[in-house]
Amino acid sequence: MKKIPAKLKFLLINIAAAIVLISGISIYILYWLDDYTQHDRFILVPSLYDMTPEEAEAVARHAKLRIQIIDSIYNEDAKPGTVVEQYPAEGSKVKENRLLHLTINATSPEKIVFPNLQNAAYRQTLQTLKNRGFKIGRIEYVPSEFKNLVLQLKNKGKQIQPGALLSKGASIDIVLGYGEESNLVNTPHLTGKKLREAIELIRNSYLNIGQIIPDGSINQQTNKMSAFVYQQTPGINQPVKAGSPVNVYITFKQEKIIALDSLVVTE
Figure 1 (tube, rainbow, N blue to C red):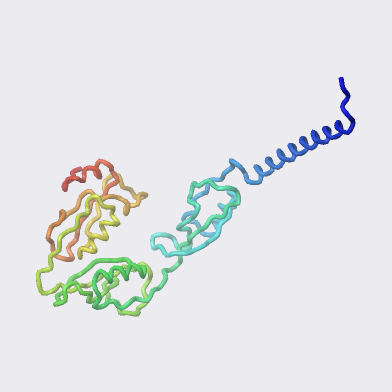
Figure 2 (figure 1 turned 180 degrees about the horizontal axis):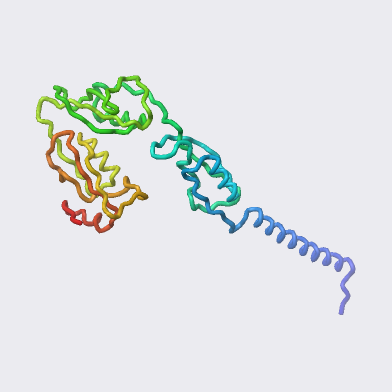
């Protein structure tokens, strides 16, 4: 057998040693990166709703997460100073030390300067009020030669003066002129629409929202605004006095939604 030259043997040994060394370093780096990035290791985000910032921080720290308060809003249905929104949402899978963004319920609502909307058009008034953060209450009609012109705006039964400071989210009632002729409107087609769309259609038709009647598919945890209208009274395209209430029946049941080809849907 031919003997390998010493120089070649030395070169081959060095190449083999280099391959072993590089392989070892690569394996180490892969294991280190896997540990550093916590590959396949997740933390389920806990629910922080209704907690104070101190309580939320303690829960987050226990879960090896961090929190940051990024905003505050006013929700009259929630406790002041508690978490009303969080991102990522409860149950999301995140890595250790992830920052959770929280929105806190303000202790009092933001105050807004009320605009001058007297003698404005009704639909323009609706849009302006919504853009300013107010809720739309009821519409009322009073005798006037100017049909559907905004004559007054009220909050809790009292007339609002332009420039007054009102809480954001306050409910505003709109007083309109009845006009000199019979003020009849046709009821809109609401069946098959989501509740939020139906409410907009009712208001834009110069009518009031009457009763909102849920069926058994809706509970306190469901978002009623996303439910579908499967029946309405008065029915579709019925002539009624402006300002009349329209009742809607809402559901999440697919069979009722599919059955909306007819105007009458029974339980």
